[in-house]
Length: 503
Ligand code: SF4
Image (cartoon, rainbow, N blue to C red; front, side, top):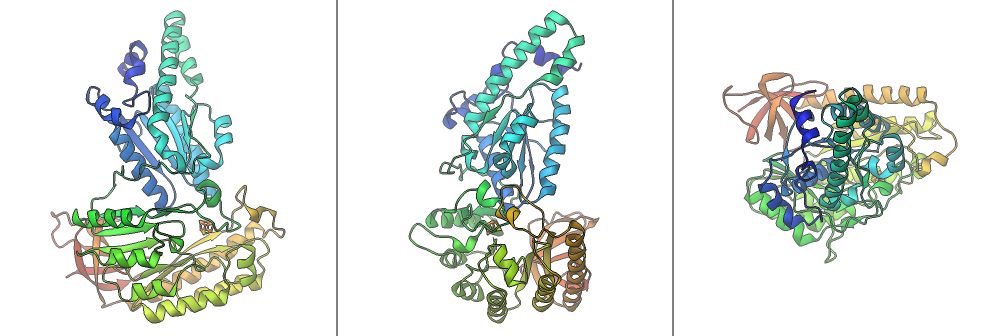
């Protein structure tokens, strides 16, 4: 037994010192409580898309307002939250393996509070509650605003259990101690899974970066693509007020942020409180003075308007990059996917984008092996990928997600075929990206240094305005360039990356 453990077991006031949150969940008291107590630490493990990253920043902001301190190490933390993604099966499985590690940490530190949030928490709450009894908190993306109240409740429940354990230890001695700890059940505190997300602490954001920021402009989705769980985990579409978003963007630019990414499951269906469209919002943010880039994610082909293309064509800050998932090149499969556009509509849109937005970068998402996908349907996907020539593509094989409409579609494609088709697309896309990258040799681009290159400490990773990643040698090895604008000349193009030199 280590010293910390001994302290935990013998501390009569453990209930009060386990959390900095007020027991009534009133935010305004939380900061004051924190002043008098040692800072507790939190660690968030985030899976999934930028929406989840943005949610984790909101959770971090809420916890810091409560007096918690961020730590990069789960072993150091008093509270570990796993912010989960349910879109694909793999990240969901990883969550369960992280939970196994956390339960070992709980053996060492019985006061450790373990929470699961995000889409898996929303979708799999009953399973989590049944299979992982040591989890203290479970809450969905719509109930992040409840966090102070949930932590206060969990805190009380944990305190009671620790006191009980301490008494048992006094009676039975050290031998039964480890056994009891392993049996230590979680506080079992749950958020409101029916919450409409009206009270999200959207102002309490602790940003990971001091040069690039996410602004969530809308949440949820009304589209019900037949393979997707998002409408069930994040609820229906809800847009944030136009002026609030514009003010947030102005403040970010004023405080030196160089890249703002507007986020939403389907940004194109943004609807401001005064009837403003997404094109209006982009145009307004583009009018802010300063040197900064605007990016956005994700677009739905059925909602991307011609006006949006025009706004992008004449923009000063909006990056010339459109991520436009097509998912399948076959109209028949698109219908089964409930995507509500045809192959022809998609191609028409791409042609308009290419002809009006100068040097636009195009990226996409594709699924192989959706139920009933024949070789002909798949060849339609191959031909679309070949026709558009995306700079890069996120390619996936279809994976069944419980609760989605696609599960009831007959004609499952064997897993082997789904994977073989995926492999063919990966090969094709690598060739396309390689050709595009090679053709960029000699071009000069502006970009922002995102940090040290992953494979070499002497090189920098730069994301260009048009969303290409360039690796270039740092001009001065002792200087930190992260977050700086640079001009870079492309010297070589590879499969996945560009090499360059900073001018
Ligand atoms: S648009 Fe379709 S794929 Fe995207 S979040 Fe909504 S339902 Fe899911």
